[in-house]
Length: 402
View 1 (tube, rainbow, N blue to C red):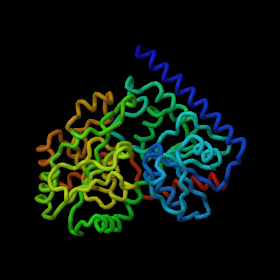
View 2: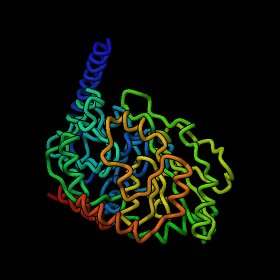
View 3: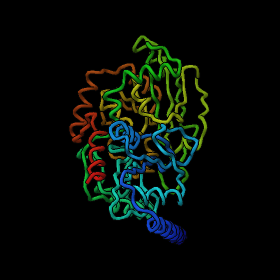
View 4: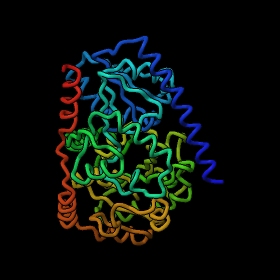
C-alpha cells in the first residue's frame, strides 16, 4: 500500500512539474533575457533576506549598482533594502522572474519543474557546506524517491556550486548528485564574521537593550522532523533546558552578566510568530527567530549552543566557543539513518544531559578548544578567509560581462 501511495505521489508531482514547465516555456517565448538582472531566493522563499544569497547581493550592489536585483519571497511583508525588488514566490511570478534573469543565486533547491534557458547561469551556494545531518543520497533508504528526482533535476541546471572544503566537495558529488564546476570561495554569509563583529556587537546590544559588558549566548536548535515525508516542526518539549541555569553558569565562569538569544530553524520560524518562553527569567532571553539574518546575530555573539545545526561549524571558523546539547542523539541519529560525524569525538564540548552541559561550560578551556578546532577544520580542507563574497561576485560578473 505504501508503494502505491508513493508512486501516486510521484505521478502527481510529475504532472505539477509538467504544468510548471509549460508556464516557463510560455514566459521564455514572450520575454528576452535581461543581461543585468539577477534573481535570488533563500530557504525556498521562506527565509526572507538572508543566508549566502543576501551576502552576495549586498556585495554586488555595493560594487555594481547598475545591476537589477530581484528576490523571490513567500511573505511579501518581509523587509528588504530599497535596492532589492521583491517578487512573490508563486508559479507565475517565479516563471517570469527566472525566465528573464541572466543569473540565478540560491542556497536551496529550485522547485520541481523550473526551466533554465540557454544563456542563463545558476549559482548554487547551499545552506550548509559542512553538516552533521546526512543529506540526499547519504541518507540511504531514508531519502524519499521524489527528493532524489527533484535533486537530480536541480543539479542538472547548476553552472557552479560554491564550496568551502575538500569534505564539502566530496559530499556534493556523492550526496547531492552534482558533478559540475565547483568554486572553493568559502561561505559568503560568513564574511561578516571575519570583518564586522565589533559593529554588530554594538548594534545588537543597543537594539535589544543589552549592557555593553554583557556576554551573549546564541541557542540555535534545528528542526526535529528529519524526514521529508513528515511535517517539519520543533516540538515545544524539545526546548526543555533551564536557560536561567545556563546563564548563571556562564556568569560564574566569566564573572559578567549573560543574555540568551533563541533562534529557531528558518523552516520552523516561518510558521510561528514567536516561541513561548517559559524558562526562568525571560528578561534575559530574546526570541530572535524572526530576525532576518542570523549571521548578524552571530557576529554579535560570544558563545553558540546548538544540537545539529551547521552554525556550529560557521562559529568555529572564527574561534567562537561552541557547545553541543543533544538530548535526543539516539532518536535523531536513527531518523537520519546516521550522522556524518561522531558527535562525541568533535572538538565541540558535547552533552546529552543538562548537568553535563553545565559542567562543560565550567570546565571549558579556550586554548585547548582552539587547538582542537584548528586541527579538525584542517583535516576537512576548509577554506574560510572572509573573501567569499568577492569571489562569488567575480564569477557572477564574468557571466554577465562575458
